[in-house]
Length: 255
Image (cartoon, rainbow, N blue to C red; front, side):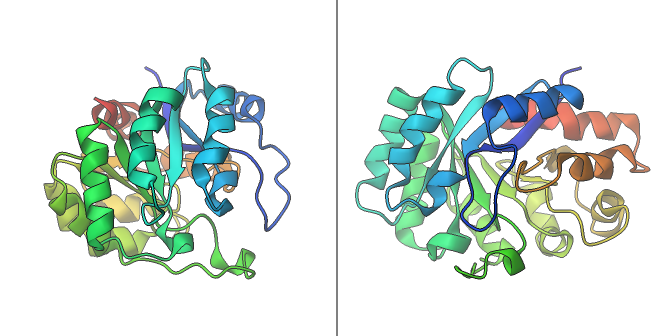
């Protein structure tokens, strides 16, 4: 059985030094932990005025690696909708990552809704990243966290687009458990389940989120890959559920 990481990154970060930010570093970490594929984007472009400029270089690095490329976008920028088509055709993107916590827009804004509808029409998945890391580590630019319910509302408004809510905390996921379970186009990664002991079990049993809608994501190198994997490995969940989280659900998201 193949294992996947839906939220891997390469690049540099402005708030602290990233010691293992190359594609070779990520591939080595994945190989050491039995992960054979997934989605990868660049963390560097989040802070570019035009993220697409950075994605041109990042896509060239990831091309031919076996990973799916995730472009970074701010849908409020002029021309961002056109970049969706270019990103798929010229960069080989399979998904686009939104970072509203840094780019300061509402997911319910009509411009964002239309952008995500177009992404779905092009066959691009949309990853909504709730946060990139602990807000106490990036005091130079304060993150503004969108309500988790706004991602659910966006998924409802764009039924033909597949969405992944990334880096949400346990209670944020719990607040929209009903929507995650019922919406056929919404999944969540488990990269930020670090607020409770045995957090995956809390999400599954305490918050009632279906095991069919959770996908493993590391957020490496911003987060520690082993820590995110331990949430799965140390869980009391059955091997069938763990297989879904590490493999099958990713394949469903990408189908």
